[in-house]
Length: 309
Ligand SMILES: NC(=O)c1ccc[n+]([C@@H]2O[C@H](COP(=O)([O-])OP(=O)(O)OC[C@H]3O[C@@H](n4cnc5c(N)ncnc54)[C@H](OP(=O)(O)O)[C@@H]3O)[C@@H](O)[C@H]2O)c1
Image (tube, rainbow, N blue to C red):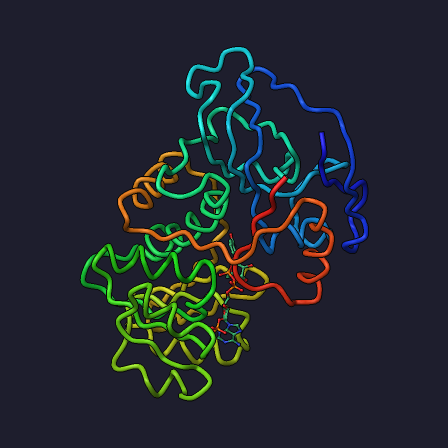
């Protein structure tokens, strides 16, 4: 089968597109005929060797995947041959930048039926990150207020939709390129961070500050004043410290997304119920993955790209 893999960590040039043996599912595993994998910033970090994830080499990137089950291993009782599924694959194992991928049976859930199967690869780890940031790390409940910095990005638009649906009041920062999308996602107040100082524009305090952007650490610390006593600062930008304010009981939580099959199935239901929109910005062939990693390494990727085998 065709696949992209790397034999050593390094720059985008370590990615090799070529022919490898099709994998065979072991006990408890299924094989997917890949419809698409999705690109995440962590794919770039894993290839470069920046992330402390114990991958075995050679490694195939692409832990968010959609596809059709075409073989099942011993003892698999859930998924069946022919099922259209999505998965957030274990990050240390081979991913879906290939024509076939092996998935633990317990990682796959039935794909949404209301969107193309390939596009559904854009959902798993990103929507789970938004959910876990808002409701597990942030413990947000109906009637509370959240300020989302970097709301115009991929995680941010899922976060706005999920928060609004839960009855949480959303204040979002965005730049002109994403303001319309942030409004369309349902934010109650949108602050153009390029025209207004968000610190001035926010009325009162919020229960949770959710940061999704590579902001200046001093500015991040200044935003903490906008969190009520006993509130939370949640961040997905794990490469920088999440500030707190012990004197006021404001706690800091850095999110590291975890697979969660039941939650992923709920997110699929929301997509099919029309409550959650999956956005795909770009579709590229497998052979162009090295070029995409080069864009990411240069800080030039935006939106959600899926990779078609
Ligand atoms: N820890 C985890 O488990 C985990 C999981 C998933 C993602 N992440 C990380 O979470 C972050 C968000 O992910 P994403 O996929 O949503 O990224 P993204 O699509 O790049 O979104 C980030 C958004 O931040 C905004 N932004 C950029 N510079 C800014 C600045 N100086 N001030 C304020 N806003 C700024 C941009 O929107 P505007 O220009 O429109 O404002 C951008 O769209 C990334 O760092 C990603 O690597 C972590």
